[in-house]
Image 1: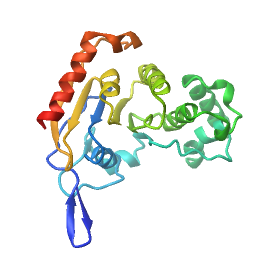
Image 2: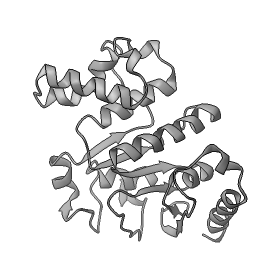
Image 3: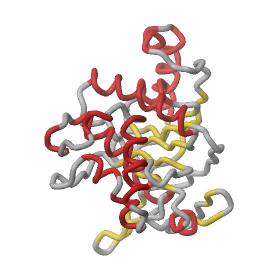
Amino acid sequence: MSYQTNASAMLAVDNVSFSIAQGEFVSLLGPSGCGKTTLLRMMADLLQPTSGTVTIAGKTAREARLAQKYGIVFQSPTLYDWRKVKDNITLPLELMKVKRSERDRKAEELLELVGLAKFSDKYPWQLSGGMQQRIAIARALAMEPEILLMDEPFSALDEFSRERLNEELLAIWKKISSTVVFVTHSIPEAVFLSDRVFVLSPHPGRLSATVGIPLPRPRTKEMRNSPEFYELIAQIRQRFEEG
């Protein structure tokens, strides 16, 4: 992927190739500016690659988007403050002209899934940052996507909230069985969440390593203190240094 800047082109992502299995949880890991978000946006058909292809279950990225196979969660929850929590969640369904009774049923189901059933009639500005991000996840799941794309969704949170939401995200993922592609610059976060981690080199982004995470599931907070956890962190950090 190249971006045109004035008279020259800036190469953002180069020579990246990988495949992801259905139902797998993978992370795109790398420093700021290495092309993680660019890759995610190409998967989502929000950007078109300068060369090469993106294929989603035999479809182009555009075909997959039009077939509503994606749910996307961005760094910011991007909720509408004047809409109640349940109405933020059901916005995609509203745009698709789904009946109100079905929208309400789906909102209740998703609020239960993300542990916020008691906050249905609240407004986003009445909730904490972590709660707002859970609402954004619920909204992304409203169309029952096969693939959940997440662009550093917890980066603005404190470490305690972030670790708790990591655990909650895995619990949600276990229930929905979607494929998850998760962008992060946190090595511990990538290790805790993922089946595999794609390590990207600094600008321009290149795939420098693919690291399998053999920690058993379900993942527990105790695993964060295990020798195996620290060994995987060290292994990935070494790949950065080698890249």
